[in-house]
Image (cartoon, rainbow, N blue to C red; front, side, top):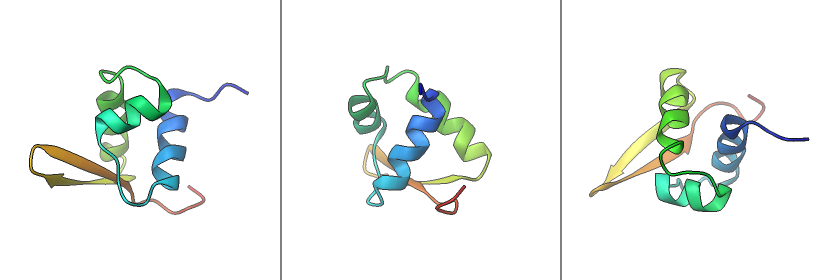
Length: 68
């Protein structure tokens, strides 16, 4: 089954509770680093993830429930 990019990002964030940067997400999923912020913006708008700035980088964490 082919998952959407959004579903793949969600699954990755759920597995990585330490948080991930945009570059890490792009590299792990082998998708464009320009696509990742678009997906993350949608998830932020839906209240599903939180973002923690660390210097220039931003770590993205899943905050929705495990089954969401």
